[in-house]
Length: 408
Image (cartoon, rainbow, N blue to C red; front, side):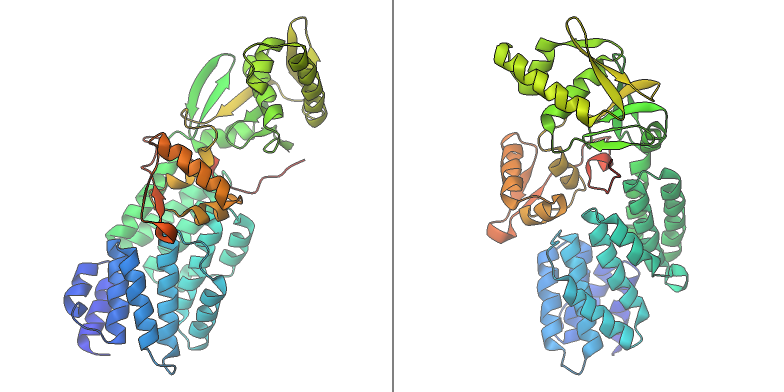
């Protein structure tokens, strides 16, 4: 490896892509192509970066297995940054095995972290945790230790373990400063903001207040019965009941919780659950059926009692009833899509469908609706089409992202 390639590689490791390009911008040999691709990725031109890295991988001979494996890892990182979540995991796994077999343990660990970050992004936290447990970051360079702690913090945030997340972000900040890479320090700072911005609204007895993630964590561990409008759950400290697939039942539960300790009239419940402006006998009959279903679902947590004018919620174990709502009145039907787009990255509809666990057609309908409302915008055409939106100012969307939750 010549001196210019070595200098360019050191510049990239220090987070200086322009310094790297100054040394190899006019060269077309395989190592230079690979370094140019990584530099373009650091500068944000992901399409050009992918083209260069693929060209480098083709240019390396079959005997240069380690170099080709490193190109594969670089392409996987570009795919993750561009939210191409369908990128073949087997290819990355094969590259990792090659790197481990040839003693390149740092790049092999980097490949492992890419897979962990992908699992975190799509909400498969248990798998991410198991894979992360196999990595000992103590011997890694400072940049890779930063990545490790950011992943630990990301998993903790999704699971609402704010103390663990703060500790991991503290370690990530120290490692990033040791690495002296501005982009890494900025990434840690952005991750830290999630813990200090409003994550939800608490609605109780006609009053509202904003909550940070640690406040949400404390609320869910308290003696309150919580109707969670972020994830469509009804829960107390011991039991979680999901109503994510029962929108009518959840609408009824939320209306009753917002009125607690009072009751809600039948006409209001009909309007909230069915969208009817005027309740007739068919609506009232349907309401009785749905109230019966809600009683059955919530039987371990609360009673739904009939009153003179409607119905009221009576918790069995909890001391009070509260509603945990989204921090701002963002689009109710497409909140999960907006939550992913709020990371500031560009997403394809197929990647959103994979992350949300739904069909690409459903995601495309949601995106078209949001685009008509001016909440998202797209660029590119066909398979290259990507969707973006600026983050919701002053709010974190963590509670709208997928995470495994215990259910009854």
